[in-house]
Length: 122
Image 1 (cartoon, helix red, strand yellow):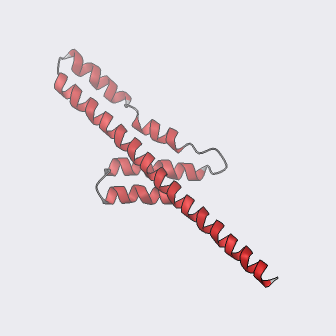
Image 2 (cartoon, one colour):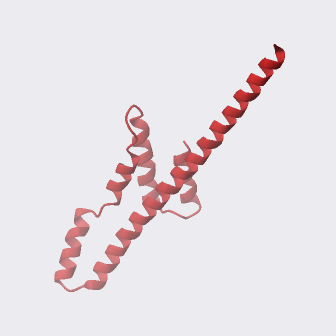
Image 3 (cartoon, one colour):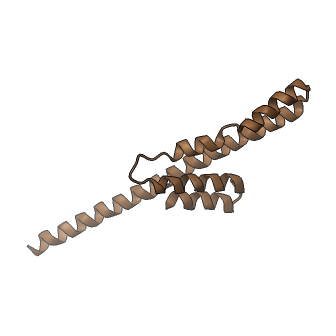
């Protein structure tokens, strides 16, 4: 699958980390498990990118203790992770769309050639 290959390539090139690639591959696998339904891989990625309840508790605790720097670092880390997940998701799906478009164009061209050959033979 082109989407999974793009995720793996992004990891190999260092664009996304091991946690992100694991979550993205999981979303693609879940989407493939439900091929008879509408694609919901974005919803799965969206769930992965939500701030975990433990982080929310830590944010509240650190704010009460007036330890703002740790709160900022944790918040930025979560936001960065969400941005990486979303960016990799969009990029992989655009690449998959390009591959599908090229394949469809190739098939259409091949069908035109086959039809032309049949007309010539007649």
